[in-house]
Amino acid sequence: MTEIVKYRQLHEDDFEEIYNVAFEAWSYTYKDIVTSSYIKNSIDKFYSPEVLQKHNLFYLVLDCLG
Image (cartoon, rainbow, N blue to C red):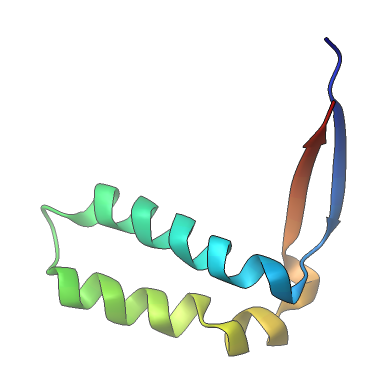
């Protein structure tokens, strides 16, 4: 089966999932280095809806269809 890959600009509907992916990635990567509250604060700072909206031009979303 062939999948079609489409890149698109970030939409508001994507914000929650971007936040969740970032939180999971940071938690896994930094769990033995920093506290969970530090991770949460960092994710809130860098991946809040306000930040994602402001820097929308720098984020693309990959959609796989097929």
